[in-house]
Image (cartoon, rainbow, N blue to C red; front, side, top):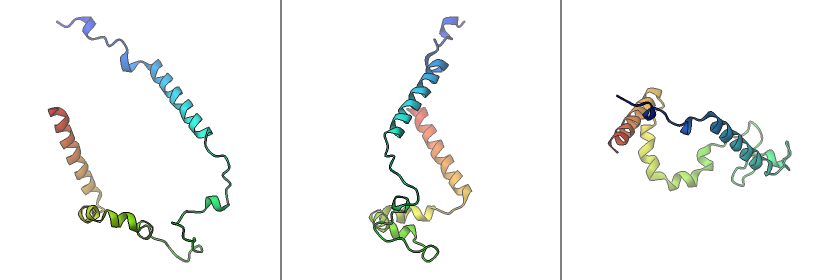
Length: 114
């Protein structure tokens, strides 16, 4: 027979007042961080233009700059990783779901063993 004292949690993590207080504290911290930012942003000036690694922005509709060109150094440095991972990137949603299920299953097995 299970006693009533073993079934009570004493609120613990499920206390709604603590959750409301945590959310309020989080919002106050977020507001403080947001208000400490720069307020000198002006729409329609140089500040609103994209940064293209120091290159001048081409006229609208004239040239399309591919991300591969902008991040060439990054992809070149990780070439070994990309050579292995790109063939796995098929673009088919069911393949991604299958990978997610395999990873979730392996993680579940690891968590149950540990």
